[in-house]
Length: 371
Image (cartoon, rainbow, N blue to C red; front, side, top):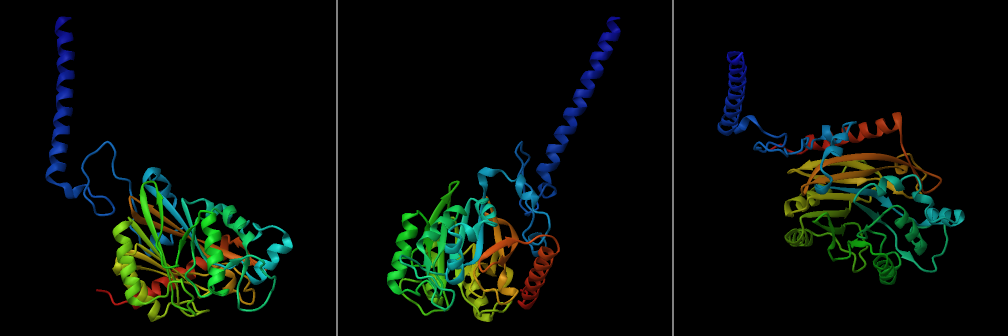
């Protein structure tokens, strides 16, 4: 009996010893062969109870994948989501429709939940918001009622770019009124020559904006090479992530021109982490350049251009940062109805729009010389 007990005891010791030996060999293997344990980003990892999250490489394929659920697995303490829109123009017929409905959240109703889903929401506000705003459905001088601020709050907007060709439609007085209104409502402003800053989860974001269309009414920031280069370079010294809005290009075309590409690349080379363009009123492609993202135009998000199919379309961009890097981009297609109220596209129409955007994005990537 005693012999049997000793036998069982010795077997257990042998099993435990073999287990320890295998564990030791495994640790020795990883120590001598670290290349065998590499993350999808190509970074070497050491064995840890808290392994590095699996992060997919940022490519056109991952951007236009139908499945972005992997982002949900990233730890929330280091994950920051920026939502960005196309042109927001609560003027002309949009303003008239809103006042007719007596509801300054009217234009935002179908997209507000998407816009509020991020940690930050950036819009390109392409009209001054003024007091005693006349109501009109025509003309090229844009102005919106100051009560549209209700809609911005309703949709969770907190960063407003004013660098565009319509901010100055009511002159310096209109710009001053708009700026004062936004500041009173604690909005971060970009595009008036100063850097807008916002801190989220300990990460400092800097927002700049430049207009290449004109006419330029001070203090709207105009786009020239030296100004773009210097302001981005200085902003990068004081912020973890620099996001640049650019009003540029030719209206009603689906591809960026060479001037847009030059300024986009200059911005990235100067330190921009993300470039967001607008103004063409059509959706334009996304480009990956030197590891950074350039979105040439999101199209129209809120506007009254009902005279063509392309001017009714837009995309809302969802830009996910993790550990101070942009790791995912996804687009939510929209379609404007009733002179100013966007709806979310679904099913086949959504797929067709995203497929076309992917094709156009691939085309411009092939046009760039590969180094």
